[in-house]
Length: 329
Image (cartoon, rainbow, N blue to C red; front, top):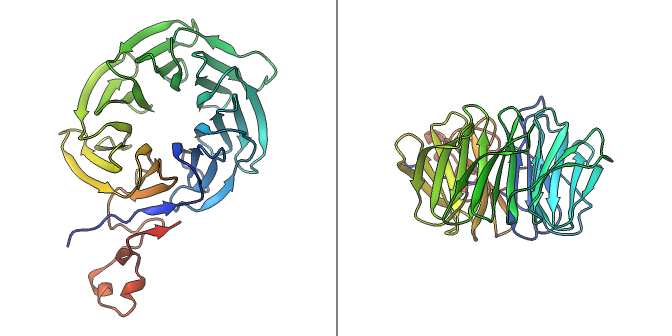
């Protein structure tokens, strides 16, 4: 029998979910943070979607959210002209970094010592979190709003994508551009994979893979609909993408073949990411929910229970996870 994908639905947000990020694997498992236009980023247990807490303090839509590898710190980028750094264990606000316009993107260095931000004022900023009162380093060059800014190459370089239809690679030490990619349309998302230095860029209906060190193109894959986000599995054997047609697509990375597609959301998919162990991927949507999807459908993992054939005929079969279309987390 064909296995049906049973996503876990994480409710709680009241507006579109526009960004999400996983922590690394910690002694307590791994964690998931979501950015939402309701201004209330949420922290969840990554494998079950169980709500842990909400970071309260922003006075506008939150456009970007991230966790450090250890899940001890969170950072958020918001429409209230601030980026905030939080204690992800207690939920306390540690720092509020004032900007001149809407902040769209936040990213920690590997040691959590510095925070990179970008947004509507077109400037990349590097904050030394040990010296919060010091002025940030500023990198100019983009001519439109910055959508995403990421550390790469062991924090020696920076990747940025902006509405000027470019992706730029910067040298952190000299703060100069190393290379610029020009696109015909605005880039909708970027994901950086340190292991193998791979950069995934989405624009229009295209998912493109680049070598992050030199921005050399590896391959492109065209999807049936405009794509807002894509994520490569940690083993690099397949990737997932989501976009305007409410669907999630899974592709073979090597052959580019579409393996499956699922419609679970009731609005465009804004963000999709694999968990650090690759067992699931999370999607955030215009419909205000996060959904967790199994990479290998039917495996017992997190809240998913494997349904064996003999269990299907047992009297409690209607209470088994496998027979319900949705699991609320």
